[in-house]
Length: 169
Image 1: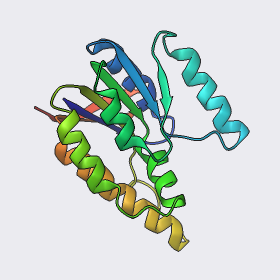
Image 2: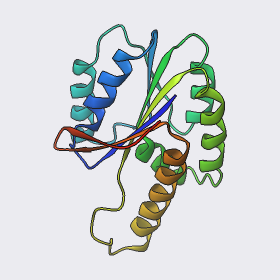
Image 3: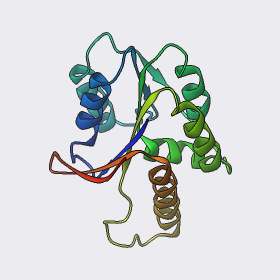
Image 4: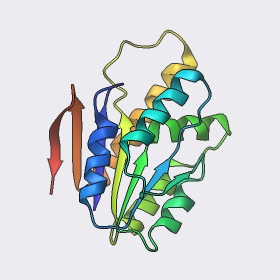
């Protein structure tokens, strides 16, 4: 089962995803893709850490999300990926070209036996960015979100902490 949770910054997507993980079959695994590059993000990571049950293991993936998902399917009933936007940013920074297709193949395989919840920012709600690099990132994130949404059994959009289901099978 594949679930995609989309939303804007501070929309409640991570908290909702964590609840979904904890309600899923155990044992649970959280795959964190973000790197704490500044104080604000370190504080956000700390907030997420205190909200999470201490028994849930966390693996930091960086760009290696596909391998982490493949390893995570052995022994874990539910896996949370938080988040695709940070993963995409890391892939772009590393100069990786092939990531969306690899992730899609991995999700098709792992999603058969493992409940996977993926979190991502919705890219299409803001103004058109002024600089080319940001526009390219937004386009790639939108395409990645669409790829994952097409595979997902459930897609949820978070607004002000309220889930709105866009797709359910």
